[in-house]
Length: 490
Image 1 (cartoon, one colour):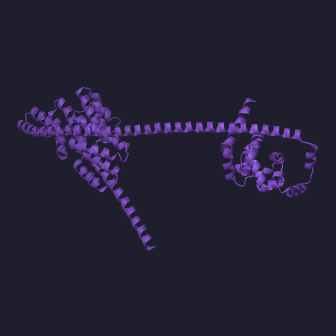
Image 2 (image 1 turned 135 degrees about the horizontal axis):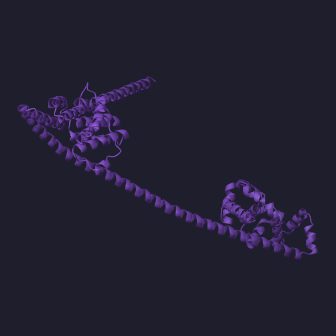
Image 3 (image 1 turned 30 degrees about the horizontal axis):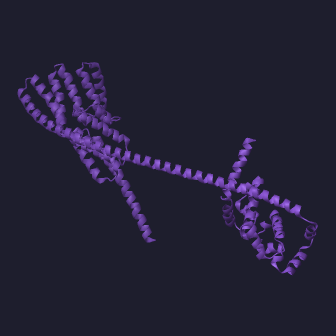
């Protein structure tokens, strides 16, 4: 009892710890997601910590997505792609459609930055949805395109919307793009000093983010502004930094392009293997269905053949039964025509007198075989054979003979022993009942067995099949079908 309580306490404590751990991991991931744009390095550190801490595939996939986003913000596009594909692999266990779509959106964003975007890749990573903050990046890039096209009214509209969405208290990646746009608008107006102030703001933020691609864009603008203001020393200094940024971004771009190719090929290979497995499974499934179909066809064929065989056996039995009935009627007529007055007097004798006469004779040769056969005919026309206690001895007494001679007569004239003879009478009797009285078709087999004189259901079914050729239930179904056909015709 104490062990059980201790086990329950341990389980309860573990559940509390596990729940608390999941809640803490969830909070850390949310915290990391919030700081991705303005402090990507710290966000990446938190995401990697939760990745090692959690065992939940969904949380690990989310951690990889946040880490990939942070890598994208810092311009580490090769690292971003690797983490995105890792996140998608984890999502095979934890099905999160929204996160997968966000991964696809981030993948498209990286390819666009690397100028690898095309219709095939866009189609491959379709149905994607960005994080809300990433949507602001698209919004600002679109405004930049409108500026280049000279659609200033639209640019102003987009700028006003951007200013309401951006967080200037914690400026980050998006604010750099915004300051670039603001500076470019002033530069076009030849307000170089004011433009330079915005470019310096973007450089300050970029120095914290450490994105060489953003740094390259910033220093291009700074160099152009210093040159326009005749600040040659600052221009040269900015140009030197620009060269370093371009070399760094070029290296990253080459690595990322190779990484993109490698990951895409690997992903497509895995998809091909999965499709091949599904195709093989489909073929196996179809093969099984074909085999089952053939098996069922064979079973139905066997069943139909058995049904045809059963039908033939039933019809053969009914034909034999009809012939026997006609033969019995003919024999009865012949016996009546051959009767003489002495026979009629003998039939009127009391049974006790007959027994005495039989005993007095004491010799089998004195028995009349025709008289026994006549007695058997009467016996067959009665229902005495349905008595459960009917035996060879009892029938011999009834026919004023002994068991040996009666057995010999039955074997010679009926072609079977006494048991087979009685069983056939009983089965013929019950089949005639089933044919002539439809109510019998609804009775249980156990009742039919008792009605015909059998002591058990099993012995009745065994004897029935040996004589008729089919089981009682099949014979009953046949008669039901025949009756139904007759009703339909009428």
